[in-house]
Amino acid sequence: MQVTTAPSTTPIPGKYWQWRGHNIYYVRAGEKQPQRPPLLLVHGFGASCDHWRKNITGLSEDFEVFAIDLLGFGRSAKPKLQYSGDLWRDQLHDFISEAIGQKAILAGNSLGGYASLCVAAQRPESAAGLVLLNSAGPFSQSQPTPEPEALQSEIQPPKQASLQTLLGDSFKWIFQQPLAQLLLFQYVRQRWVIRQTLEKVYLDKSAITDQLVEEIYRPAYDPGAMDVFVSVFSTPQGEKVDALLKKLTCPLLMLWGEADPWMNARERSQKFRQYYPQLTEHFLMAGHCPHDEVPDKVNQLLRDWVLSIN
Image 1: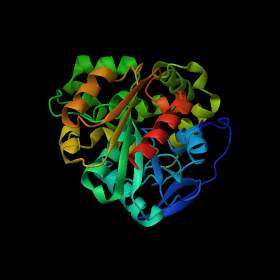
Image 2 (image 1 turned 120 degrees about the vertical axis):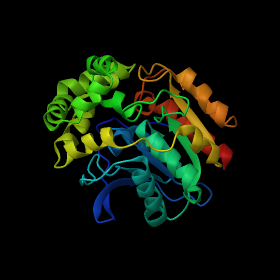
Image 3 (image 1 turned 60 degrees about the horizontal axis):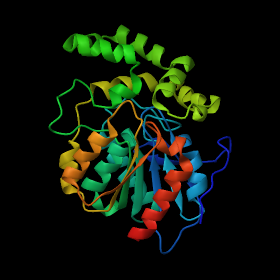
Image 4 (image 1 turned 135 degrees about the vertical axis):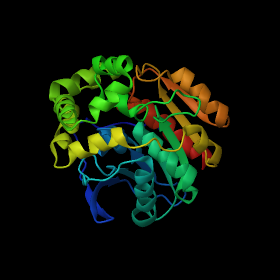
């Protein structure tokens, strides 16, 4: 059966779940399927469950589908905390336990991929399977970096990223100064900067709509948004991807947007295969967010894979 998607303007109403005293926003669609695990979709840095709208619509024909806003993003609360893979791992694990009520297939893009990998590797009782779409996270053999790999590239304009390369530790010191933090945050959350960044990481420019820009722009002006931004840069790196893969026991599907300028998909694929050779993977003509650029292909590949492992 061919999976279809609705127009990106279709609103999908959500609700709130209380976690550690904070409001967490999520969307649920589709009916519970006794013979199929539910899906939990996890967005990347600066995005929200809105980024999965095309996938929720298509996949809910065959699955019960959940999409969640990580704490600090989207419509979820933005308390002043130390944000990390461990925090989001615990949030996702508790959501699966309390709100979904059974093991789920976790599907995560970029930062959401790293958080989902943390759940599947460190909380295996929550994961029936794992789907990673251009997943972030450092490997042990990588050069150490001042901030979490891929998170910094997701929110730094190219000129600034080049400046960091030149200045090294000096950049790290500058970014720790409150005025510099404020100025940088004010810069990256402007609509034209958001659009410019998307144009660099999307292969299909027609997928960059005003609605998409607005969905990223709006939460950046919520109270506490700057504290989240600063915390992500200052948080120590979590467990390395290779260490997590060594603990992984559930099936793994990798979907790569091959035109992603932030990561070399083929090279990164080899690293994942080195530590988890039994994975399944597909390379797509898309950038950093293949689920939004080529949703029909992603939905079909994800659907077929889940049915095959089930």
